[in-house]
Image (cartoon, rainbow, N blue to C red):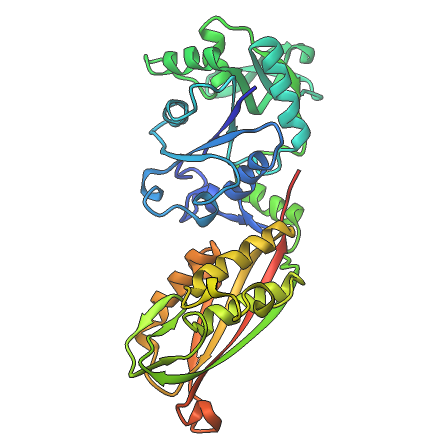
Length: 389
């Protein structure tokens, strides 16, 4: 059975009132969207994920959406939620037997809830997670500008809908098609009902809250707990400078009269960061993984070594949280190249640019570095435990 999850994240959060779309606000170690996407990517029953984003984010999506352990597609969201889901549905694999729809604003969805909803969709065709109502429910009318009770509704006939909502492919196909003919709905279950399909209810979870207000966000941040980075590693590298070599720093070619001498491209920044990541993950050092006796690494790009270290950390259960680098060089001055180096490192490590720091210093004429005979770099890498199911 092939199962695809659609994450509805196409809204701009106008009602929430934040400067950024609500789904990009941070709680704990990640954004609402990141936590929601990770929950489905990590679930053993999910084979692929499609994320509907605000169109302006498609050109430069967050790093966690650019690489994933499972197929992940990005589509432009629409004016309405149902338009976003329609667009995402068009991008799902034709072989998807079951398709889930989940709001990015529900970042605490549990593996059990995902599994229950999938199982119910397989058995019944359509299913939603929903909570029982504990309070007495009243329907009201507006009378002369005042709200007046019209009737008391038996609470055993009422549930509070959540996501995920799951459907066999043919059911969701009919539902989203109906939504494009003028039928307005706040969720896909309502469209499925109107298309003539019964929707089964599975027990939701009180913790599966939707972040709607600023108060919800603050409560979610308290629940997520303080941000922790897990483990730290320190890296250091030094190379002699010689004529006839290109100076490569953080994967960026820097015009210079001399370059660093080494078995690979002698990129001191990448080497220091690689060692820092390996150290934080207790994975040995760069010499262990990339010995200068191995001809495979002769003149090799050190960015590849850095990417390999990131994969090793991930295999060990860790993601890179942030990187801080100090490069020490008398000449040339590096100010004009710092941003390019940061961008190159961010791409290699697959984290946001805002979590990469690169600083350049001189050694004030002291020792070999100060005399312009060598270049050195110091780095710190912070790793955080990876969430998995």
